[in-house]
Length: 429
Image (cartoon, rainbow, N blue to C red; front, top):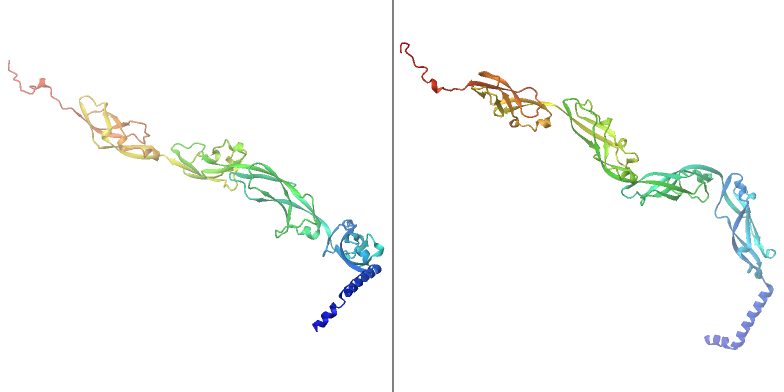
């Protein structure tokens, strides 16, 4: 069977090939002579004319569903249709023909071969969402990113402009919650200016597209002042005068140091902060007192507390009252002077009570064994008597100390009078 088929094909093979070639040639001749019709699909953008028609009415629009691109078919003879491209067609929608404020009919025209082309178009529309145009003004906020380098702080900042007017579709404008700009502080070591784009956000913190919005200004100039920081000690000093019998035992304050900020040239000469004046006036004080005050009131001009630094200071003033203390001074520390001639003196008591007045801190430094003095016996007579003691040194004496002494005659014999007591005979010659 296969042999018969093979024989049938190969029999007169050359004539058969020639017949096929001739048939193809005749088919090409017929096709080119008859030039049959063909249909092609094109897509072109739609041009919206008189767009200001809605603007004049205080409205704006948004094209929906990508309807500003139209797809259509064109039929023409093959020789013509093959010479046409999408750029040879124009699709136009005239805003003045708007229907129900939602659709604009589209008209398609051919730029060449118009009489030889058939545009197969059903009525198509540009679909619109039409809204009222509204305007709102928003204060511009500055969002800080990062912090200044150690030892520096942002002292002040200003925005120009400080607000922005946003105009656009009512639904979009009403969705805006805030307008802000972002500023980077990480490398801020000197006064500077930055330009930043204004960003719009809704109530959820999502960015609002500005594609359909008009802003009175798209960018903001941010001016920033930078301060240097420095930590210095705080010294506390009282004013006024205490009454007699009282003295300032001590003054201490918290904090002992504070972080301040200012221009570098201002901080250069500041080594400490001195707190003094009427707030720490001790006139009339008789007991300890705690005073609260605001450190900002004592800062030099051009200097402020660093951000986060508590400005409240607590000052403890300690007042010490004069006291009286009695010391048992050994009698041997009291010199008996100016003993009358022919007499001898001796102290009757082992100790002498000495009462001193002063402040505890000073009295604590005094020892009874260190106190010395003298008693003047020049006007005394024989017997036991009490004599005032004069202390050696500068002491505040509560009352004059005294010492009891006894004064006795010295026992003595005159050798020339040894026989004075012998009886004499009055009759002797």
